[in-house]
Length: 404
Image (cartoon, rainbow, N blue to C red):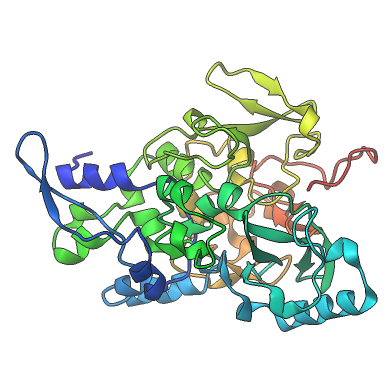
């Protein structure tokens, strides 16, 4: 595959995917929007510094794709608190009135929420919403989440700092070095200081767009994931759609810091794989490693994932690995279908019941058998199995705790 020097430079600056809503104010205000000046490298050749321009800039030429992307879940991975669902507000206010402190603590050991107005940011809203608060240590979660299907709050661990565990896959253009230099106790500190754009924006998948908008006639000045092999595409999507038990690059994190499209995700994170119903990961040696002590049971006995955001963990086990790309079935620029379990927007290219028929002989496979709803995002099964292997409907062992 032919790549120009500029494309290679672009790839070198594309950190692993984040997630996001187009907001040019954020792009303009933070440290990721460096001037797009030209510099000379060691050979005296001009090197252009690539910068993020924001998803709204893409809409000028790619209006249909931008409008379709806005209907998907990707833009809404972190939002202002005014995007809290009315039903979630009502549930939180009821919990406050009832004094349900276990559901209302800011961080595992923090103060108790007394007003919905204290919430700074909100995450998601199609399956669940989680609530984020500014603290001197960084941004922390409430100890409960609002589940859209049931309309109720349920406990959430909330032990993580958003900057240290979530930000890489919930924003576009996250800059780890910049993030580590920020003083989170500064009254002027904002979460938006860590990245170019909140949510999974256009440049999360296509790379910084400054060179592309300067010369839109040259397609080599922007990354197109479709130019890569199927396995490279799967690893790229898996950089955020895979659960891991730790980063190989940055101790204490789980996100694939340093990953670029074309890389192998196993070189960056300890991706979880099933083995004796425990959290283990498949390393370069091809062996399974036990990590039972962390207590999060992520897999059913047949290998199917029990938690959301584990499509990659499923795919590596099944017959579609390396044969079918995520984008063969999903269009990330459109949300015309609905999730059959919740009614939330789905990026499927066709109705779910026609999924298998798109490639296989009509009626040869029943998608309900090969992709049952098993994993949970909203504390109830609402995510479909992606091993594409016929499986059961749940783990028969009642002693296995629910996935967290």
